[in-house]
Image (tube, one colour):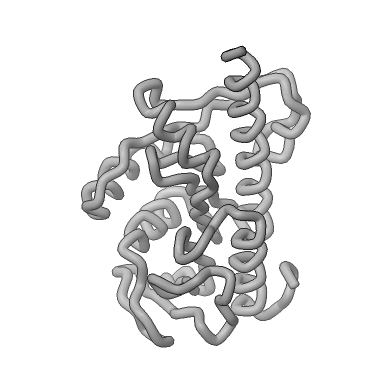
Length: 206
């Protein structure tokens, strides 16, 4: 289903898949897929819906101002951050998950501003990484209920950020890619690395 030619089918399948993994429980998380660049158009899940139940016809179409053009329901307040990421990085898809480990570690790492990973073969699943013998830093930004302020805080840093994701403290992971498949892969790899980091911390504490 992921490679379906129907973007609605593909995005709804990814949303349900991430929900089933425990990374978007209940109404948590939000997800977008670019369907047109000029003018910019996104498919998104509407705000406040159970992500395990999202069907293709439930998706809304949103413009570059975050306004709903088609579909039922309203756009998430976090649409502004999706738009900032897409416009700054050229991403085709942004997937925001709320896994317990990513959310917990993002709070713990807020003061350090990043979580570093190195030495793992799975790093090569991230865009641009070709060897395990490297260090990757996942930036962490403070959360803000004012999504305009949060987007403006994150936007200037996206050019220097790695081309696949950031954490928002106490909020979770935003991952993106040049296709829906790439964005989903980045979610999987980053969630894998975050779980390893959590286990490393647990081992070190004993």
